Image (cartoon, rainbow, N blue to C red; front, side, top):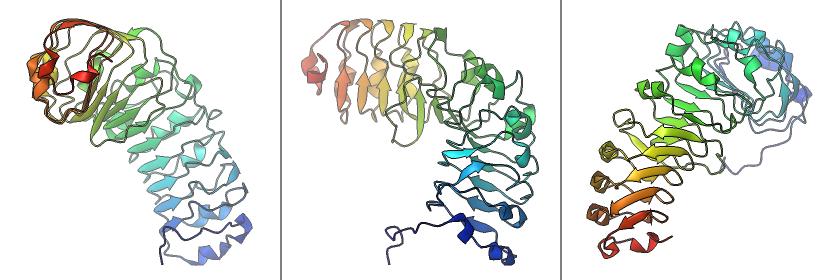
Amino acid sequence: MDLYNYPVPDLQANELSSNLLELQHLNYLDLSGNSFNYSKIPNFFDSMKNLKYLNLSHADFGGLISLQFANLTSLQVLDLRGLYDVSTRTFQWASNLLSIEYLDMKYVNCWNASDLMQVLTKLPSLSHINLSGCGLNMVNFPWRSINSTFSASVRYLDLSWNNLDRSILNDLQNMTSLEALDLSSTFYATSSSIPTWLGDFQSIVYLNLSSSNYDSFEGEGGLLDIKHNEMGGPLPDWSEQLKFSWYLDLSHNLFHGPIPSSLGKLSFLKVLDLSANQLIGSIPESLGRLSSLRKIDLSDNELTGIIPKTIGRLSILEFLALSSNNLTGDVKNIENYRYCLR
């Protein structure tokens, strides 16, 4: 039997028999992908104190979260993503989840929960947090709400598709243990520069500050996406921090100055998009050392000089856009020259 294609039945919440409580050693429960017709999350979950894993994602529950999980002190994973009709007015129900490591509440309505950070910052094991599309605003993030313990433990933080402002970046600057940070479509683009402290994030492999994240990145490895943000200033030299990156998109901003030659150190880079900025100077020949590159877009800048012949040696390059610049050179030396005039 193909379990992946087997039809999942619609269930009613009242069909979730409290006889589950008789399974005294149950530590893993997955009810995801069912349809409970927007009935309230059952209260008896709170009595299943041996649970370490609970997945209710996309299960069509509704109503308020109150005390359904308050006593699950052994719980390590709680997945509630995709419960569009569930909301919470407080996070006090999570205050005893001292073993929780993974919390995913994507699309759960949390905008009334002013104690969100007050509670989450006291959970010592928490390392993965997804609050994407939860209706959050700055009321949920009081000034200096992130403490040192929280900063050291959290590795993955997704606050995308909320209504925050750039002051949230002040709270995040000490979270240098982060490996993934997603703030895409979180705040309106306003003119600013890339925070210099982002260069201190030695462990980061995924950083998304884009304000128009409508196209999903499905590549492998690291990502730095800050497109459509009206950010300016010179391009920073993050060659050490980004050395394992596969995707770098800083397009449609206000960056000016030359392209750093240190980009040639990003040996894993597959996509480089610096288009629609105010970059000047020549294209560094060091880009020709990036043998993994499949896409280069430097169009709509103010670049000058000769197109480096080294770019013509990028054997797997599929997309090259250099239009709307002041470049010269023999494009016959570039295998994908037809894209130069896009």
